[in-house]
Amino acid sequence: MTAATHQSIIPLSHTATDLLTPDQVAATLGLSHRTLAAWRSSRRNPLPYVKVGSRVRYRSEDISTWLESRTHSSAVNVRSGK
Image (cartoon, rainbow, N blue to C red):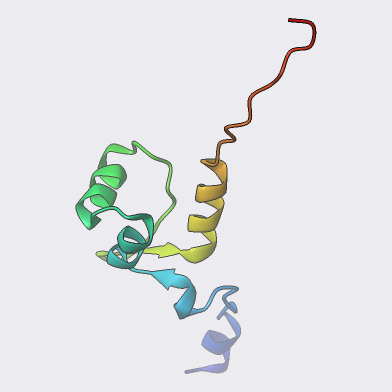
């Protein structure tokens, strides 16, 4: 590697262990990897993914954020007076 090439490398904020395979994400979410593939192709659910060549990976941070965005409360608002 030349000095110029070495200087152009940007440190990554995520490590390789932060990247999950579709099978790992599917198992965690209780889905099939085919469901994840269908979501990617149809853009049905905005679950972010990373494409490196032909490989698909998911960042663990993105999975957590996506899950938080889909969290709903079952609390019922109680009206006063009636």
